[in-house]
Image: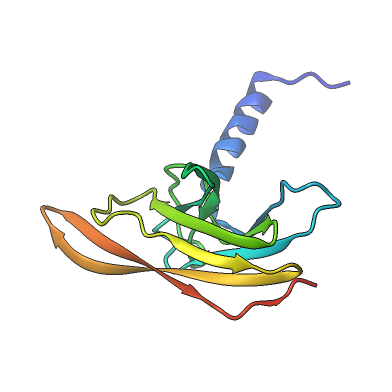
Length: 159
């Protein structure tokens, strides 16, 4: 059995540090439902790699439950700097069929408009795609203000 030397440990730490600066994963899935539960899916995608969005589901009490981070596609070799962790180009979430509400926060920018809420019907065995766009409202005092726009696509079969 080999011992872990100081130089090997240093290389391991540097490797782990650089792995946090890699480009976003193409897709992340989140499924917390029991195996026997009925499920439908919502798949979020972003428009810009430099705007990472934390996606939340709003529960029946009005509390936000964090689902994950989504961003747009990155160019090959583009550096990625993460404030709240790496995002994925697509975030697919398994949910019980029925009506669900979602909202987002931008981890890189402050937005002055109130959170916009997306409400949609999740159908069993179907994936509902949601594209999230940033519309620039204006810039003042070196601060950009954006409006979040959700575009819901046609659902498609999950399998």
